[in-house]
Every structure is written in structure tokens, then in C-alpha cells.
Image 1: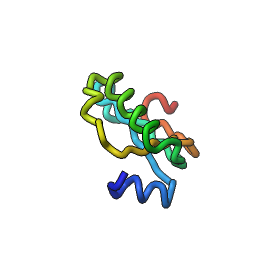
Image 2: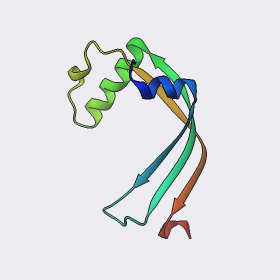
Image 3: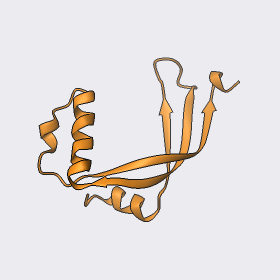
Image 4: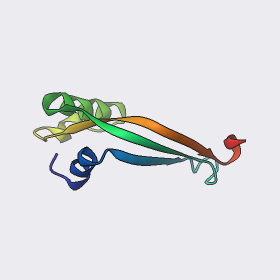
Length: 86
């Protein structure tokens, strides 16, 4: 909360994400367009980021005292590029 991108995403929920697996082939990637919805703020959003930190090897205490916001992305389109697209 307080950073530019969450404020802009809450105001205009359109977003896109690209996932590339360089270990397989840089020509293989997936593009997702989505609508973002705020699903949590306050204590619940802080619990969300701490859970992600535990899952991916971070320290949940690094986020203590922060004001957080959690978004849910609802895909509007998904396009696969490369070998899997065929």
C-alpha cells in the first residue's frame, strides 16, 4: 500500500502477465491478460505475503509492520506462444 502500482491497479484493474521458461526455450511463453480485484487489505493481506515468503524461502518477519494489499487476477485471455501452441 502506498506504492504507485497498487494504486493504479485499483483504479484501472486491467493487467497482463508474461511467463517465460528460459530453461526450456526462450521462444516458449504464455501471456495472460486479466482483471485485478482487491481481495484483502490489512491483517489478511499481511498474512498473504507472509505465507508467500514461507512458501518461497523468504523470511515472513521481513514484512512485519507493513501495510499490504492482495489482488486476485481473473484471466480474460491466455495465449501460449511457441512449441506448445500447436
